[in-house]
Image: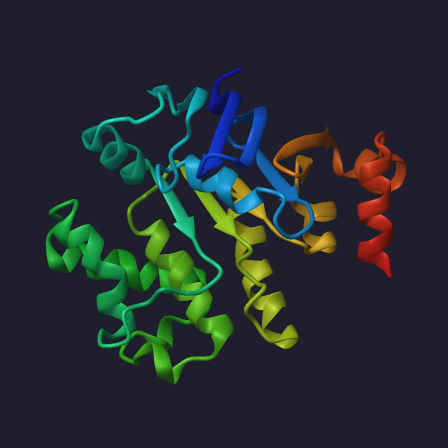
Length: 247
């Protein structure tokens, strides 16, 4: 079985004493959807940010698509990983002064040196997949939050990544906009995209995840199938977390 991500005994400190990741080990297979859950401050976002080099780590080993990340890697390796690992953030991080089309085509043209016409054709197709192809001439401020997040997903896909990371992609959205973003993510999952998703959306985790991982205080508490996690969690900490989520 080929793994997209392999992490072994990752330690990450902020400063001398703030241990953000405490001996974290996990694997993600190609084509798998791993949902990461846990309370605020548990290390979820820090963890997935190590997967594309946005956060470093002090000890352990991390292998991304066969590329080995040691502590303090060189920038050339980080750039190569980011070409192959896309990320969608909680905040949309779109350039407000650029049109939707230009937001999506900027990186393919500048980073991958694709011809503009080709980049634009890909962008329009991705917007079509996201259900918002008619918005390509607009600017981010003219779109709803849900539409902006779908543009952010299209922008990540424009680089043709092998892994997509999602850091609480719906937490900044109004409730009525959450479904349209989750539907776009479901579509990607069903097409076989390897995804690591930090989210509190239980329905998404139940339906789409291959496995659910619970973190607390920088540690992996439990990794289970959605069925086992939501109906028969092994760990007391997992059951307590789920009870609080259901309240």
